[in-house]
Amino acid sequence: GQIEVPNVVGMSLADAQKALKDAGLRSTVTEDTTSTQPDGTVVAQSRPSGTMVAPKTSVVLTVSRPAPVPTPTPEPDDD
Image (cartoon, rainbow, N blue to C red; front, side, top):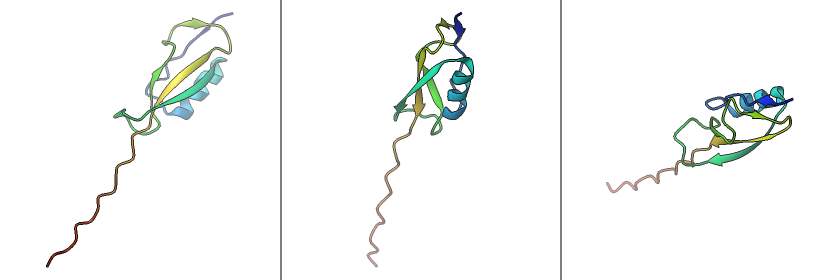
């Protein structure tokens, strides 16, 4: 009994994990701090959608985690 890997790219992490769990698969998460996608969006999956895998196979989800934007230092007022 093989399971078809669902396409979860573009989903939120929570939705992607639920989709994989519902399909009978496991998920692990890695973060991509260089991604331009919104924070928490799945930008890649380790096994392509449509691939047939064994139950409980782990799929690595790459999630967008943009680097924090540094707070600008206020310029001193030289009046």
